[in-house]
Amino acid sequence: METFCSKLPKIELHAHLNGSLSRETLKKFGCADNDILEYNQAKQTTLDQVFDIFKIAHQATSTKQNLYESTVKVIEEFASDNVIYLELRTTPRKEADMTEDEYVETVIKALLDSESSDIMVKLILSIDRRHTYDQQVETLKTIIKYKKLYPDVVRGIDLSGDPTKGAFFRDIFEKARRNELFVAMHCAEIKNDAEVMEMFDFKPDRLGHATFIHPDFQGSAELWELYTKLQIPVEFCLTSNVVCLTSKSYQEHHVREWMKANMPFCLSTDDKGVFDTTLSNEFRIVQQTFSLNKEELWKISKNTLSYSFATDRDKNVLNEKLDKWKLANIKILKHPYYICL
Ligand code: IMP
Ligand code: ZN
Image (cartoon, rainbow, N blue to C red):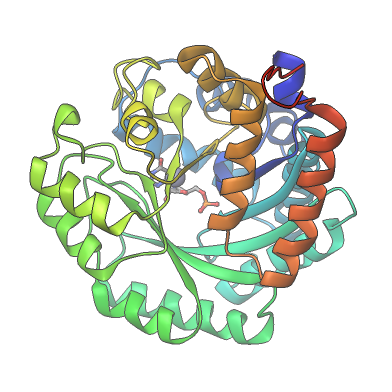
């Protein structure tokens, strides 16, 4: 099954660029060994500590050249994990050597230079919830500018950052939507029923984590009932949640409620560098924990594609790839004997 999960063509929809840098990339760009150990330790930590860790990656990507090379490297690493479609997300930021515009342009250039027949890559630009309203408005202007310049590359907007701080400003995301951006939103990463209600009311295209929604997971019957009506696809990041202690264990991860209720979800890495994981590893964990068979794993990939922000044309190309792969790799004997080899 390990080989199967690795070979399976996968779709990654929730990966933060600066949390996805590998140890090698950090070393190459001059990070101290101690910092690298802290960044890539995958030991249990609190959400607070995790948000400090990103500063290490931000030092490594503080020049245009390093940012470019790091982005190319992250894409190569996803491609070698058999990710055929990647939506990479990152927060535009300025540095001594780089304006916010140059940051976005550099990432877009790296994306365009990295696309190959193996991997298709799109960009989601993030708004950091810790920023003030005015700062968020400024970032939105940059995001809309690049959406207009590169409509096929910039597909969506995300709300992320430390969930214990800052806020969700609905009008910012309404404006994003009016400008044809799909909306993904970190939601219920901590218990905050009032904010979840506001987000549900806005109805983002996808949710990240959705940890505290189901009543068995400190949510409420009301939230869950509303969720089951909305059925917004959730990006689950199991290792991230277990490492950050917002989920007790893989067995007790809330993904099980989505499986039981047949609600839409996908599997993602969140920050493969920080949490020392790969998308194949996340599939393997879910397979082992919930005893999934090959066809069920393939179906997760297939469903994930339908939740992506890809154009219909791109979805058709990728669907064909997934179908062909299934025919060649998962043998199904017709009724009455049904065997996945
Ligand atoms: P960047 O946007 O490429 O700089 O990636 C790192 C940033 O992503 C962090 O500074 C956070 O704002 C955000 N981020 C990464 N992981 C998480 C998460 O699990 N929850 C919320 N925000 C996150
Ligand atoms: Zn995230």
